[in-house]
Length: 473
Image (cartoon, rainbow, N blue to C red; front, side, top):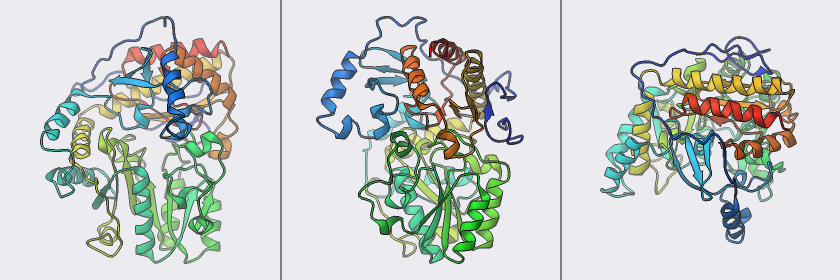
């Protein structure tokens, strides 16, 4: 299931305008179940955000910017943020009663669909025993075994409570294991909001156009070196000028926090070679790609095994979770097995473990990733065709359940390329799609996600909405 990419080579990358020669599977495996969702109305009546506006205005007096995570404020797309009331399957409803087909999926975790009946039933049973123990529970063993058996690089794992926490822990571990302090990250890659990573970061930092965050001391980022994504020569130069000083190279193997940007052919292989030659650890941040590109994540999909991996989102089934893991000899540095300290009160809590276990069970069923491949390919091809038909510069791509598109001719290989996008046009497109009942990430610089709950009807309605909106902007 390789993504077709124009200008990069067979297997990876982005397709520009109408050229997305992705082969689609004509049918799903007989062993795979798809849950139908409630259909959106063909015509939205009396679309209003009055209640959302009232709630958001009240929230601005209670929380900074009215939100608990910046991109939710719609700063880059303008207009009124929507306040969600409920979700089910591939759909969501706001407090004004508007219904949307959702391609955010709680920013990735909802790969089997929102509020899945089997997950909810398992959570209800687990809750009868309590919500947090602050002590070992058997469910931690079960999920750990599932993660270790699925992800090629992971021989031992430590559960935490968020992707940010996982990246904080894995960075400390890499420095402890190597005895070095410098790291390389890539421009536009986001690894959470910990101080060492807020250097040329993506996600909300890119969305809001913020400089390196105030409050981050220079000492915290002094050892963080950056390079353009997909530029192996720049990485080689950093290795040459910092010989024997680099603890790790960390990256999103497929960038999702400056929009969807896959690696060029051989880019990941070259990183693996460089790190091995220099005694540096290679870290894949698979908080977004883990269990989404394939059951074993991006590392299984591309056949590149890093030294360490971070996970999150899907492995908690919609509940707060994170994890980091890798080779046993490295992980045994973590306390209490070793001297590198890291702890968490709610780490491995029974609710997150339960939701993760149930989600991974479903993902292991036959036909899962073939179905994601099929519907996501149809979605992206449809949007690109609509863009071409209506005269817009647009490019995009996908791998299984992860996709993205940019309002630029492309191709997009890195964050600088992504920044050439017409963000004003995206904002108009975004608001138009909302009115048509389609909920996308409120930023040009975020990837989109499909789920097993998305139906053919969802996809066709979305493509029709995109053509309608694109013809007006």
